[in-house]
Image 1 (cartoon, rainbow, N blue to C red):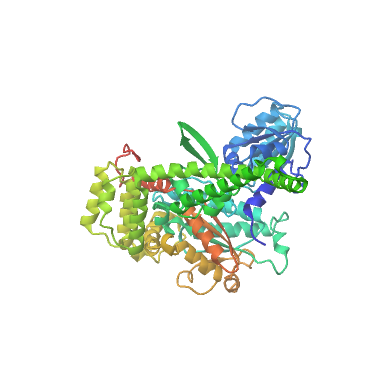
Image 2 (cartoon, rainbow, N blue to C red; image 1 turned 60 degrees about the vertical axis):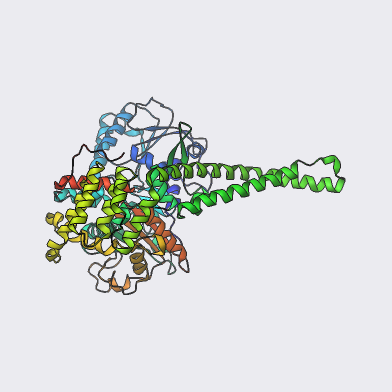
Length: 617
């Protein structure tokens, strides 16, 4: 059975909207019950790509409001609270209950409510004599945002900075690792599966794997086991593999310019939560780009010129269909005898019945014509095709392009030039001092804040001097900064020369393939195995848990992107039989977003430029 994270999360949300009563597929538990939905910012973003306003109304939601907003009392209506289990939300719920704002409070927390907060809720409502208003309290384990059928984000910002800050304290790193493990636990609980966990030795991936393994083991022996159903699906059920990666595994993919439609829209038009705002005739028009858009699904991984061509093809096909209908409906009925008239009437009914589908097709065509036009304008203004081309060449050949300095002085925003310079550092194994100075001079000439560039340059230089520390303990949080220096560039230099375009297979995709196949491979032989269902310390657990696997959850710690997602989806579709891969990350980042995090680290390390330098032109 294929993993369907989006559908399972939607089912859980619909059940919650119906006061956690079972819901018949396509219906509601009780359409006569009118309710208020109260959410915090995180849960609002969780719901945004999952369910539309009209769908909320179908489930009896008449009002939907933020928990931190001023709200009027509606004392005769039950309220559904969907919030994160944090103290500020608990305090607000206590205040709302004491004021008798709603008839009953159905409290739903996005993840497990810690016992101290549960006790605080009980104490607060008892003191205000409002405990009777609390109808139910639920742990929903929905602490993640599902963007597409095979893609999710934990929406945990700045995780790359937090995990790679040389000055990070033990408790800071532990908190981030714990938060990531909790988010992944929610994903697995929603899917109802206990995976085999694979990760490289050392760094954030191993730490998250260890915490997650312990969390699942503890839960499996509890009375309310969320994984019981999946554990009794019979011998035909095969567990998935959860592959954990650190962003330093392949940095270039997070920085480089892209030429495929989906990542290009995200990078250039700032798509967020499947929505993009496009400037048209002086107005900003919002468009939804998700699994409900057939054109988006079919062409998300296509390069931009193919997308533009496909828009033309679909528009031409639409015009032909409209002409056919016009011919059938525009004829004079007086020219037909009875039999011909009957046939004409049948054709007319058929043509009229196809009108809604044609209207929907036209909306999609108009939407993508507008989006493609906006992209084309940015591509021309910033010479994005040239940036893609030169970066592709450097990453594939491992050598500098002759036009590098000219590009750094030519068209493009400051971020474009900075990203190109960082790709140069990552692509070329040995950078001559004179060449480096020329690149830095070009950045200065363009008034670019060089913090991100200098940070990667510094890390790269430290790679050699710290190589002797490779055997150091990877589990000691006290030397976290040192661990980062040890691991970062050794993994970077191994992976940066792999790119998606030109038929090459990304390093991430190649390693995932090896982990799913379970065959010996130099790239994965050293990867650790965590099997929460195996007895702890079992010597045979590793051999039993190495695959092959039909399904995988690939998770990138420190920020992911649509380029990696598209590469994994294309790989999965090429397999016979087709494999099922879900891609997740701590947060979805554009190239600019990730460069900004590198710049923060550069300034923290003391190698940054002036903080007043603007990052865009």
